Image (cartoon, rainbow, N blue to C red; front, side):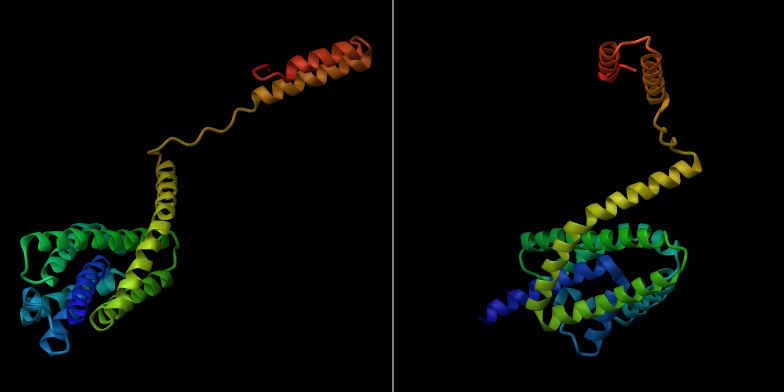
Length: 250
């Protein structure tokens, strides 16, 4: 039973670190560093370097920068784009470190899973922020940023203290992402297309040509006029109208 609990705790910590890294890497590093240095968190041997005062100061300084960048419309999306190359590898490294010094295969597997989870949470955050930035007011950015900071801290606390609850939450998060990401992708594609058309980079959509329809209506009106004038019989009018209504006839 104790081994089972240890396995669940290690799995929750591994997935929790990678998930939090994809949302706010520096907040995750700061929480672990401060928690480990004060004795509130028992970090695995490979992650005890995070307790070093230099690492804590560096994480704190970068978190302060992200705190303001993440709440500024436009700047937050640029920051997210830059951190695509930082959060995902960091999530993989933290996940590998969380399993401890076991077998190389297990560390590599943890790194692969951690990188995938970090990429998933990062893509969800970055895509959502791009959609939020279509609104000119900054309040939604502030709400989203504060919510993400709270989510990272609460998620790490849950992973450390209630691993089963965190794993259930992570499963729900993954299912939500599977449902949400295609919608975010379609919305972003539409937004980029509109911006490209506005800037003149992409061609404007062609307006449907109504000349054929107008030509067809003119012919129908002339046939009706000839019928009313007696130049056409009912049978001739119906025959001509039938020919006119055939597909491809205009």
